Amino acid sequence: MPTPFKTSATAAVVLTSLMGGHSLAADLTIDITIPKIDTAEYHRPYVAVWLEGDNRTVIRDLAIWYENKKADGEGKKWLKDLRQWWRVSGRNQEAPADAVTGATRPVGTHTINVASTSAALKHLPAGRYDIVVEASREKGGRELVRLPLDWPPATAKTEETAGQHELGKVKLIAKP
Figure 1 (cartoon, rainbow, N blue to C red):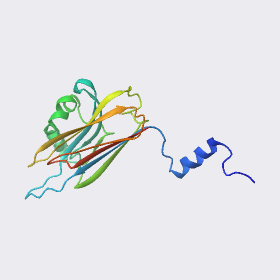
Figure 2 (cartoon, rainbow, N blue to C red):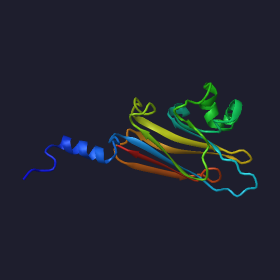
Figure 3 (cartoon, helix red, strand yellow):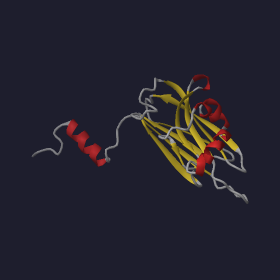
Figure 4 (cartoon, one colour):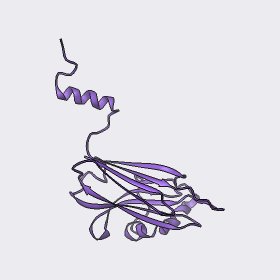
């Protein structure tokens, strides 16, 4: 009686096709919750997410959410309200990289997936890093949280923290 999978390579091909072509390499998932804030004038927050190394140096920007569709680039002038990101990365850029920018997000949980094959992680040396998430809201406040990351992850690991005002729960999942 023939077996359904004659080799482990065949099984891997079938498994990958069933998974929709997803890679089995190391990946990061960052879940960011934008909380509901009861206020008379609510504006969606600008958010920056970056990978930081020793001495708080930016290794890579992972996401910049701002009003990128405003006429005459009006939304860009408020990026400096993301103070920490602006000091370490933003002011050195003419415009945030297209690959990581997007519109502001509504209340709820939003996911950023970063594959090990992406430009952000492809040649990242092994070591200890932080994932930093900063939020700033017009007529609101500012908040910054950090999550530790050992790269590459030897085993699946989850780190969680929560902001107190502008950010809700922030969760980092690192998978080998």
